[in-house]
Amino acid sequence: MHRLIIEVDWQLYQQLENAAQVHHLSLEAECQRRLAGLECQSRYLQALLAEMRAEAAEGHWRACEDEKA
Image 1 (tube, rainbow, N blue to C red):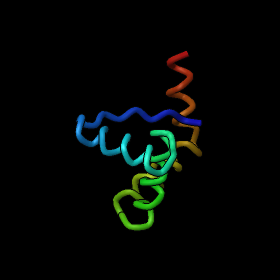
Image 2 (image 1 turned 90 degrees about the vertical axis):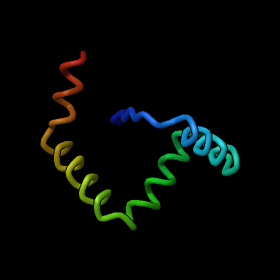
Image 3 (image 1 turned 180 degrees about the vertical axis):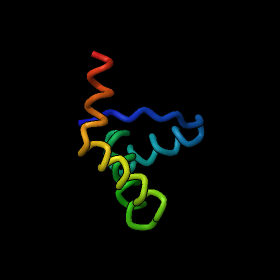
Image 4 (image 1 turned 180 degrees about the horizontal axis):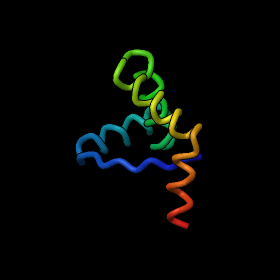
């Protein structure tokens, strides 16, 4: 599994944390739930995910991880 680190402002973080508690999910699962819902709606997000998947298939992500090791 790949790790994605994002920076969010405090207000958005609090909203995500509260939603996670309401839905009885971890913060990570809440983010995944929201992204899954947006994937169908956003052409930009669809293109971004397609690009990330293509890079992963080419081994680009693995090469970046190997550099850190």
